[in-house]
Image (cartoon, rainbow, N blue to C red; front, side):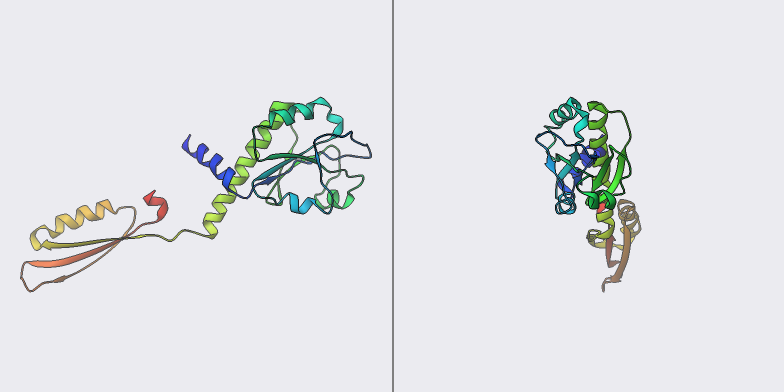
Amino acid sequence: MRRRRKGRSAMRTSLLTIISLILLSLSICTQSEVITLTSDTFTDKIKEKDTAWFVKFCNLGSLWDDLGKAMEGEDEIEVGEVDCGLEKTVCTKVDIHSYPTFKVFYDGEEVARYQGSRDVGSMKTFVLEESEKAAAKALDSDKELHPPPAPLFFFFSLWSLSLSGLQLALYRRWCTSGFVFTFGFRLRHPFVYVLISICLFDLEVVN
């Protein structure tokens, strides 16, 4: 459950652009609250930060209006359309050969194609799930490319010789998930020496 919440949080802070293309043949759509994407705007739009795009095919009728209403609470979702009759360059670029076509893009790249039922519930679930998976994958990739620096934990102690073995064992057990480097030096007193241990953790282990 916690991982799912983190995934949703990562989705809202990552670079997110999703567009589902329902491509038009040679038909003309009536006016609606839909953003028309052209060869001049397509590439920049699908790379917008924190924005999801789901593109409309006019022949879907009231289904698209119902889907738009269902998406009102999702700030990352926008609605748009690409007319392949007018924007052949765009449709060729994203490899469109049949109509209608639904595609999901993340950060300018295609990540999924919708081939499910044409009902509001199925389409909404698909868009939300694919956007979450894409955002989580991008976050993991970003961590691999830019790993956070590992913190150092220093442990300094002045121990008597008789207790040093036990205390060192306990310290190593506490630092079992990290790497322990230990060195020491004896004081002038024959039974006392200084032992210094350094525990190197990875941030993922600490958290």
